[in-house]
Image (cartoon, rainbow, N blue to C red; front, side, top):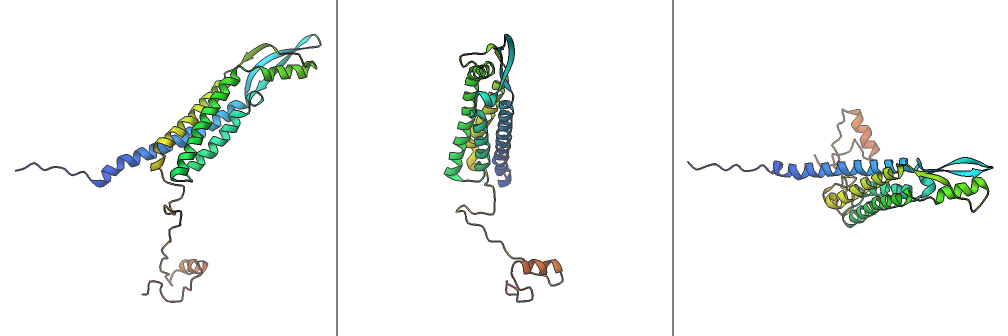
Length: 217
């Protein structure tokens, strides 16, 4: 007897790519949303500390990330909007939005690294506290929060790269629309005169429930 060759089931062949697409979609959503949240949180924390000489004494100074640079917070919001837009557009639009998402993450990381050692915001606080425009902050130190913002930017960048790699296989926000953007018509269900809820639904659709069956029966 000849050997019997097992024929793979079409559903099993399609299950692998489908699972991979759902996995990449979930990771993208999680990475993008978490990255934006982490970045916004980091910009609200203290990034640098120092002192200013006021009336012969030391006056403590602190500056938040948003005082140092507004770029990470602004790009986090842009990235969050791009993350939502990835699932609302198709084809070339999805590609462009994915690029924007990636650039937002990269921009956050670069801006946070530059802001980690920036002392200009502390110097401005020292000048305002002492009343001397030439005054600068002394005993300056920086926290780790700028690097937390860098991590947030890296997560958004990861989401953008995943969208660029797998975005073509993801569904759009609504499955009721055809590829050309036109909504798919819904088939009207036959009205059962013995079910009051069917009569009300027919009236809401502007149909005559007492008229002939649309199917011609």
